[in-house]
Amino acid sequence: MTVASVSAPRSVPPLAARSRSIGGSPVRDILAVTARPEVINFAGGLPAPELFDREGVAAAFRHVLEEAPAQALQYSTTEGEPALRERLAARTTARGLPTAADDLLVTTGSQQALSLLASALIDPGDTVLVEDPCYLAALQVFGLAGARILAVPGDADGPDPEALADLVVRERPKLLYTVPTFQNPTGRTLPAGRRAALASVAARHGLWIVEDDPYGELRYGGARVPWIAAHPDARDRTVLLGSFSKVMAPGIRLGWLRAPAELQRACVVAKQAADLHTPTVNQLAAARYLAAEDLDVHVGRVASVYRERRDAMLAGLAEALPDGSAWNRPEGGMFLWARLPSSYDTTELLPQVVAQDVAYVPGAPFYAGDPDRSTLRLCFVTQTPQEIAEGLRRLGRGLKG
Image 1 (cartoon, rainbow, N blue to C red):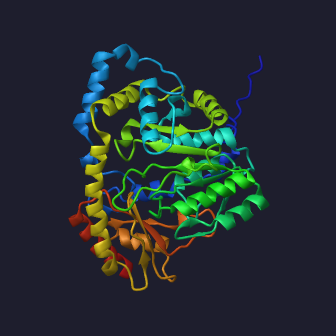
Image 2: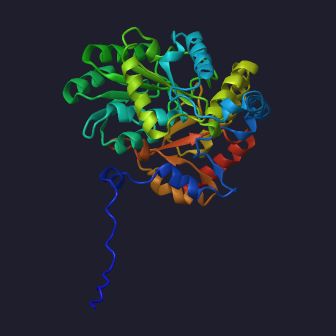
């Protein structure tokens, strides 16, 4: 009898090329390093947990589990629970964009909405245009989809419309991704005229606009600027994304997508393949919260606290940052953007700053093209004014080495 030879097992097939081409998240890597409780962390993008309406949210969950447990714990439709979509549509309409429940798709956070759009719109090799700098997780989504990502040149008011038009004619991109209100990472807001100009370019040349608005309700001053999606030139070609993460709680993972019908249907199919539907109990609890509580009053309380924290950071920056630095004064949101003199590299400086038990996010990962290595992002909402003042003192020591 012949004994079969035993060979060494072969290695499994490799990961998909798109997975191998995408590295880790620089922000997640930074947060892992700065997780020590003694670190004053200006690097995160987390809302302040002490400001969550814990009682209101808990009451909403209790209500749906007591009054409609069979529905709350059952499968739901992919598009989302009708009660939640109706209330979201009413809020969107009240803010100047007439919207019906059927115009909306509920997603598991607005981050999922980005992934669904990438599945519905982007083929490997397609060109996507982004702001410069850009929300980091959007760059990751588009990169994983195999897109060729190009940054639109711009200024303090955002992407330049003439530069956008030139890129659209030359590169034939699928979409422009923008966070026009209190942008991550810069905190800037595109003025109404700039928004209208971008909408006009999209109409003339044929372009989708993906308008991400997770921070827009966190306004501390100035007048609200209408969505790009509300501009007549853009209504048939703009996707508007929203989220409860910054105004209610990120842990319930609720976002939504408003899109023209054909694109929305494609996103519904993509979502069916991804997770069937967003958790029913979370959707019903959010709908109950909107019915029983005044979310706008809660957001106003949060914004009042955040305004104090922004002002505390602005008050200490001149002493903390080296001479020749510049920074903005955001009218809302969570982030402030600073640029040090060109001789500074904020990525190289980070370890010696973290040694002082304080952290920021270097600006380089937010760029699709050549980065400005002298930039950094500071989140001001998670710490108290006293903690911010101490953190800035530590930052100053760290930057001086």
